[in-house]
Length: 135
Image 1 (cartoon, rainbow, N blue to C red):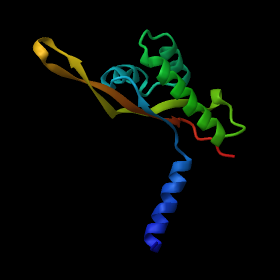
Image 2: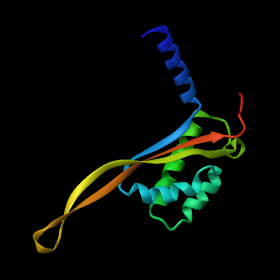
Image 3: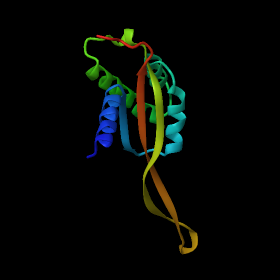
Image 4: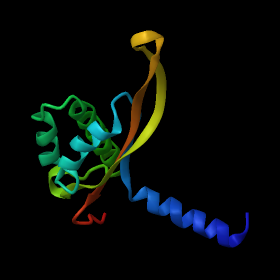
């Protein structure tokens, strides 16, 4: 590995240490339905986002709530000794990508068949803190 490539790799590694994220892979709901839930919490403070998800009637909100709790746990693992209330955490970035698609056949009239696409998605949540805590 060349020195320039190695220096870039070190910079990326240091930047990743300051990012707090969680990823949910192959969630068996369509990306369109998941984006409706995810759009509600984008840019919102973490405790408020958890409340929004808890009282949402959408089925996908339960999975996003669990994922957000996982991202908070990842933040706590990297910031031991810092209280969650003082950190002013918010959902910096959240996005949904399409996952694998299961293709199934549905019987149709007159001997035909229609293709059914059972979609899945990948959800990524990144958290950030408004005030930087130095130790």
